[in-house]
Length: 160
Image 1 (tube, rainbow, N blue to C red):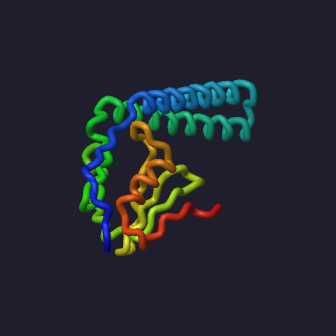
Image 2: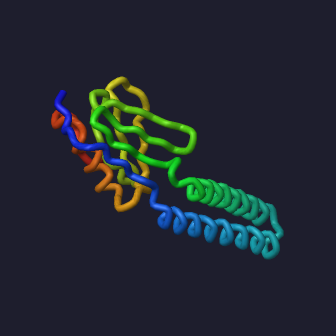
Image 3: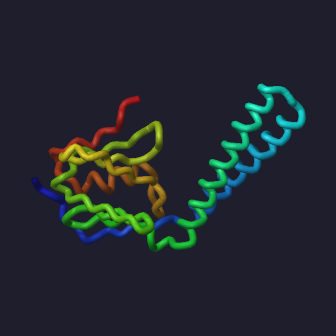
């Protein structure tokens, strides 16, 4: 399998974009919390109570998501993607995943989730790359990874 050889490319987390995403998640949490409170007050029925509980759970989910984004933003160097000559290394906090280019079967964009999926030959679940790195969109990230993989591997977008 031939691999394009270039220098290591280290992609760091885009702190500003992560901050903006965290703010959106916090806005979602506040909105869902306010909806839960208003539904509980204005609709004191069983259905209203059930809707209020669901809205409160959604608010809790958005709050947890906000806290995770804040934690990522506080340690940006722990969240990197390194494209090496031998393979890629994904560091997400304390977790690190290494995949050799020879083990990559296909690289594709998941249009539904807006992430890049790196499919492996060994049948392991695909490695999910979120476009959270400076100067990359989901398509740019897919192209960067695909350039390192053998031309015989498939790099097509997923059909919806």
